[in-house]
Length: 160
Image (cartoon, rainbow, N blue to C red; front, side, top):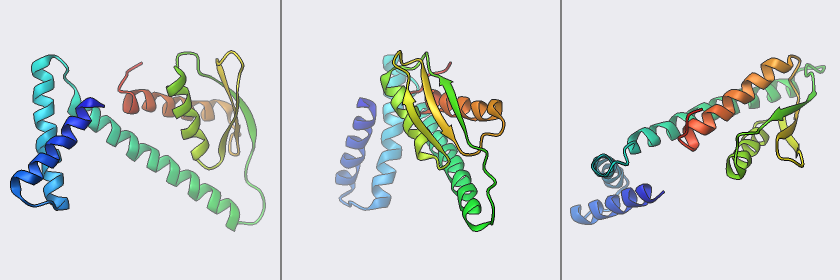
């Protein structure tokens, strides 16, 4: 987070140096600041700032895609007659996640229409989920695995 704060400070300084505080000038300052912070990081052995930013942008686009897909699925359910959902409760393992990662995953799951985190096991090893469209348990778990993996790699910049 300190690298991002440094990047913001450099963008503000950039605007003051140019004597113009506009959105485009601020974006240009952010870009120049990102390069400066990245070069500084490589010089001090803390490389990966631009990769971290790219990973967060990629996760944001992925999450927007699955959020849009889930909203369209729910909207289609509402406007069409009958019921097409196959609800199911799923116990999802979350052994390797710390408290913050677990909270982010649970919120991401709950934000997606059609899925809801109902509870966390007392030993914090499982999330209990209610899924509206989970006819195939393995496919639903695979989707949540992908979300958890992308959160680890994109939000927390950690592989594995």
